[in-house]
Length: 235
Image 1 (spheres, helix red, strand yellow):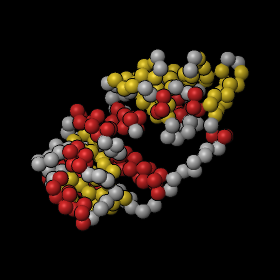
Image 2: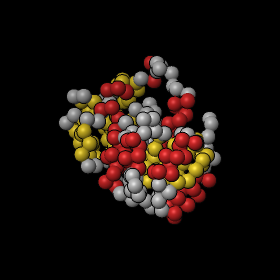
Image 3: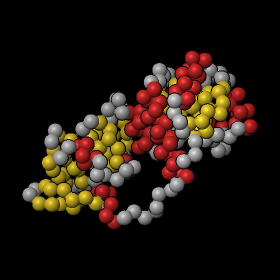
Image 4: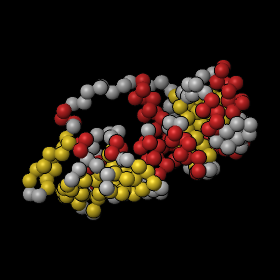
């Protein structure tokens, strides 16, 4: 895979330096420029189009949100900000991730890998038709093996050495850990929102604070996973 070209834009020198140091540690990120505000960024993009922006929101002249809205075909964006209340606007703009300052290297690395997965998929699209063998799973419940189609699953709840699989109109309980079951689910269709819950992304109907509404059920989102979970669901 080719490197992901990127630009840092932040009006705080310390923040720019910190992000630059993080990028230098990640081999697949290629830094093409560092800007202090959106005006500098606009000039740089005319000379040097890139794949990805690490973009602060609260800046002089024009905010990062306003800047992205003004572009007809913006690069993909990872917002970096100290203000959590901008998160919903970030989701609406289809940003890749939303990093709250102070940003740890571990959290930055997670965002970088998300970007890598996104560009890898865009450059090498997955086959349009999935294998039938990857569309279901058999589990042991009620003393027999039950076939479950992945597209029927609403969410899964872990209960120590058992899991409850919620389907429309019924619930199945099987002897398993939530970790081992998650590994058998198709990548990209399900997401772990809490240490005890996995949800089918396309079954989420509404989001209210740290609660997901799926039909008549309410599923929690851990405050530690919120930053990574919500963008994937909203998209």
